[in-house]
Image 1 (cartoon, rainbow, N blue to C red):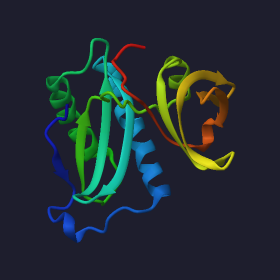
Image 2 (image 1 turned 90 degrees about the vertical axis):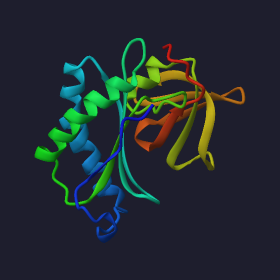
Image 3 (image 1 turned 45 degrees about the vertical axis):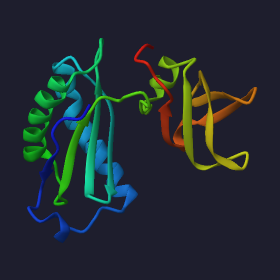
Image 4 (image 1 turned 180 degrees about the vertical axis):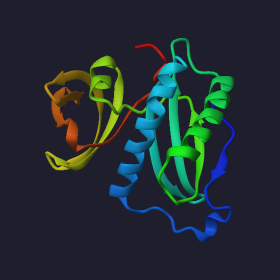
Length: 178
């Protein structure tokens, strides 16, 4: 469920150079997370994940939210208005982007180290930034953590994935229960 999308920044997004620098994207995601986490907590919402990337329609700042009992469209709309105001005042970027606020859905992103323990027993797909045993893409059952290493059961084998090497992780067919 997505809240209404709003173009932010330049009124002519085609004139703004797309964001392609992953390091700058990571810095922007960290800044947005720092700004929005207190707002979400105050509203009784969980800030699940923030992503910033270039897509065919321009730069997208995508915010995933959740709460006990699930997120509603009204929740997304109400919080997106507050987020817009907060980002307008405090976000340090000249790039134009579309803001999307959404529920995490059945392919919920998993980003925090604690999430890998929280969703133990759930089916997940993980992509790493560097190969582990010759591969970067994994699908299996989350088995929890060992320190800062995510354990994934795939094909009857436990794969140990260093948390710092995880580029992207999502649950598969998540039904909202943890």
